[in-house]
Length: 268
Image 1 (cartoon, rainbow, N blue to C red):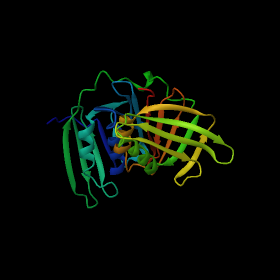
Image 2: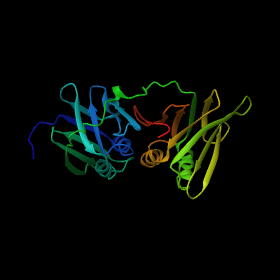
Image 3: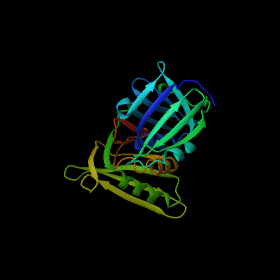
Image 4: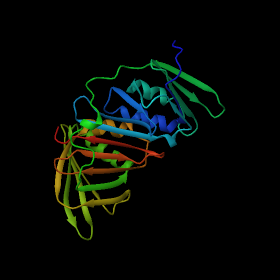
């Protein structure tokens, strides 16, 4: 065991750390998090450049936020990190993270101050993962369609497509009517069945729907499935943005100062 002073000491409600862990799992085997004076952040492409995640928790989301230097980075195995974090009760427990440069300690702190601790080694950051500054297309994409919707409704639509045995989902704006507004049609052709559904502005669970033109694009179901399953329970509401030859942007509304968003490349 090392005796070095901790490079970081963080304490936050369990739901913040659990959201952090869930953000990495859909697309990254190893996730490198950065701690700066702004907060804790993850902004990485996956190794195939087909998907990207951006998670940020502002320092105001933490009950304790201490670190040494200008920036500290630590890397975890995403699946292991999530298993540890999920041992906490999100609405009752807090999670403390400390890192000394070699070892990461995750402490679950209960309401009566009881503690359970997991110690695990820092993982050397994967050299194939590129920084957010190299991401193409850039984060500020001029999207043609924006849809704010219940995350449960979106999960239902993706699950419907998955059980057909298909490997891609087509997003189509099929009509734009002055009275009813735009309609988003989701279609897939699987080895078991074909499936189609529509989402309209006046549907229950649709909070906002803006689109200026008829268009369509195709996105891989495997990434969509991983995102919705991993991020289930993080937020009741998400925003979708897409356009012709543009990545699908999925943004979850988190319950703490910060954000969680994904980009999935089209036509893979």
